[in-house]
Image 1 (tube, each protein chain N blue to C red):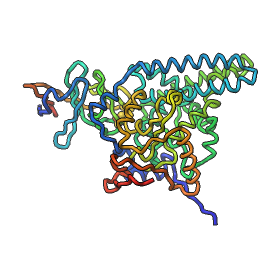
Image 2: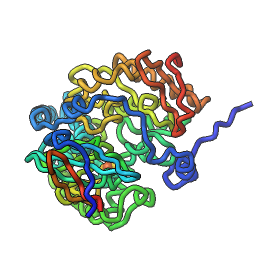
Image 3: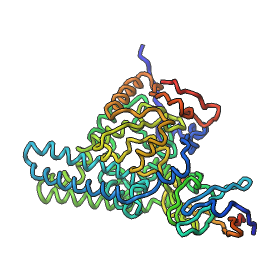
Image 4: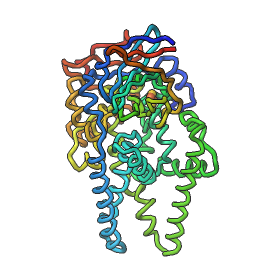
Length: 103
Length: 365
Ligand code: FES
């Protein structure tokens, strides 16, 4: 376990995504339409594009480059040209702050 | 003494592909106009309403014009009637294929998929291969050796453009591909951008297309008339004029091998009828820079980013004149391109991958 603080809980809006850089790694931290938090690798597996510039719809993230989609709850690629799943990370909210487990 | 103009190799497997890679032009970062995240989120919002409305208008229009064309069969009225029917079949076929391929037209995914498959058939494009070819077009827009959707080389090959008035260049290529796919084979260049995991889908779709083709041919033989084909397969050919007209204005006459859609993509103001047929793809620079923005929000996106773009061409006619003028110049000077000055509020053009190559060219005309 390697929990890292990302931001204040309110900083990620419902149905939105933010980018989080940790040393040389980039993550995307999301809130679904239900208000739950999720985290994945920050780059699309199709073309290394920042998912933080994409659109969260329900529990899906759409990549801004070619409209590939992933399920943010399990990282599954659900729309081509995204074919390879994303790595996901555990998220917790404690004392009003969002943490992700980057291991 | 005659000047011999050398043509570059536009194939995806030739030396230009390697060169683009080495120069950092393949899968590169492109210029994007800075737009506040909140505004962008609003623009990216998906809706079903506008696309359902437009699809109903499209299908009802086809039924009405199709009925009139049917009544006119055997008279000279059939010429304008089928021309209108074919135009309404092929032109929205092309734009609906495009927008539903991006998955942005409707909010509901299955609606995008259904219209995507119908529209793909209308313009005789294999649904899955063209989805992948278009993804590559967005990754490497007009990068020679990388983009499979460059309409014609520089200097231009006029024969291709003339043949495309009736889809006689692209149409036979597509039919040849269906046949190949029906037998479980792909062209070598298709393997460059379609992943192996998609091959079975490609073959299945081609076989369905083939069955429809055979059914239409059987109907023609059975009725002893080409009328059945006049409604389903042939409109792609005789109704292609507007598809070509819109298509040539997207990128032709502009830069190759740059990383800035303001340099290689044209935005044009069009009237409401053309915008309906083309589904707002006249805002083409906007679409390429932000493919997440659905067709119905492109006019608003245009307002948000026009301070960073050259002025839009005032009409389709003005854009066509610019394209044809540029192609004629490129016949003798393939390096000729049209560059419009940027407004004083714009960020500079981005010509290449190297930051040092960023140049201030607001006055360049
Ligand atoms: S880079 Fe994300 S879908 Fe292509």
